[in-house]
Amino acid sequence: MSLRRYSVVFALVLLPLVLAALAVGGVLFLRQGGLAPYRIPQGSTRVVASDAATIARGEYIARIGNCVTCHTTRGGAPFAGGRAFATGYGTIYSSNLTPDANTGLGDWSADEFAHTMRNGVSRHGVLYPVFPYANFALLADADLDALYAYLHTLPATAATPPPNRLDFPASWRTALIGWRMLYYRPLVAAPSSDRGRYLVDGLAHCAMCHSTRGARGSLPQQGYLAGGRIPGMGWYAPPLDSQQLRRYSVEELAAYLRTGTSSVGTAYGPMAEVVYGSLQALSDDDAMAIARYLKRVPPQAAGTSLLAQAEIIPVRDSGSGSGAEIYKRACTDCHGADGEGVDNKYPPLRDAVSVTAPDPINAVRMVLYGALAASTAGNPQPYSMPPYVQHLSSAEIAAVVNYMRGTWGGQRAPLAAADVEAMYGIVID
Ligand code: HEC
Ligand code: HEC
Ligand code: HEC
Image: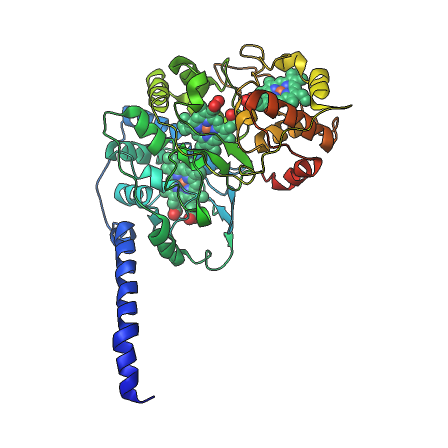
């Protein structure tokens, strides 16, 4: 081909393609905030109030934002970071939030801190979305300043988290700009009068667990609070909406959040950790505001989970060692013959999260390993669910789970012993 023919092909075919790609890239870049998120404020000297009331307020915000649970490693100083998070692309360690000048936030200005909380970009580069910055972006200026003031009253601890262990290209922080272009859309703030929504969407970041994550850990785009399997945790979180929560009155729901228990349901697994580390500190007003808001959320299309679309076959459950018999022998004493439970001691199984969920993982894990609910001021001596891994075979566990889910949850996709065994591998934490 002659040079002329090449330039004609370029002008007619390639040039429009290149221009279109640039235009799409430009739009995606602007939709994730343009350049602004990557400009860290430099040299700001704005001083924030640090009186006792502001610090107390900051402590409360830190508690409800649950910073300490993610930013503390087992046996480490509180807020000094180093906790490991398993993701689909490797392991990420949390940062040191204590005011140590070299390894923590000691020499950060209030503006730099607010910028990082809102944009997920720090002096160390673009941050991984395990850090719930998409939610913290909604925090009010005064709340961020109080949080900053409180963090600066902590004892300074020198601690550097271990280096992340990530696959390429996820290991390259700058590649996260591409990820953000594809998946990150800043949330729209609630009207400031809606305290419940402010807490749920912003500070308390409930959607981190209660929404299905899309490809490559993308933030939930659709299916607001629609529930799903929590990546890296091996637990299913139910939807949070008026339909799912119809079993609770507003008062019962508020009490569940603060105590981890109620006559309707008990928190276990990661939810027990959230109640223990964070929600038990909620003020009466804030607990009621969250409960009122959640009872108004309209139901969404269900989240997808690995087994949610399992083929629907009627439960085969008869003969010796049937699920009904195992239940009667091992479970009735606590959960009652009809799965009715015992008020505030043993949760009902009728309509329970693990029994109605499209994903059976919570039910299997509970029977395998048991659980202890969070010990809180409102429920200082929680009752525990014993583990059955030593007492029942995988086939028996499958049978009793099928029985519960078929009888009280309307779930007709039965598990086999092999499904139970496969879940040993899913359990990560
Ligand atoms: C779900 C877990 C989780 C919660 C909750 C959480 N963080 Fe983090 N945070 C992380 C992880 C993980 C990182 C490290 C991300 C990275 O290295 O890309 C991080 C990073 C940060 C950074 C950046 C530090 C630096 O040196 O770059 C700041 C600031 C921060 N978090 C503040 C907070 C505050 C304040 C709260 C509570 C309001 C909080 N985080 C709650 C997991 C969490
Ligand atoms: C770390 C993950 C995680 C976070 C964050 C989280 N949850 Fe949960 N939540 C779960 C899991 C898993 C379950 C299912 C197990 C259970 O019922 O205890 C659950 C269960 C619940 C239930 C019981 C629902 C029912 O039908 O009985 C409520 C209510 C709830 N969460 C509310 C919240 C609210 C409100 C927030 C934010 C303030 C929140 N959760 C944050 C993981 C989480
Ligand atoms: C000694 C009393 C006791 C016995 C016996 C017992 N459980 Fe439990 N069970 C509990 C308690 C307490 C909880 C709540 C634990 C928590 O919140 O951490 C629970 C929770 C559960 C849950 C989760 C319910 C939800 O809200 O999603 C399931 C499923 C369950 N049990 C099934 C069984 C099965 C099946 C058996 C028999 C094989 C059994 N339990 C035997 C006390 C018991």
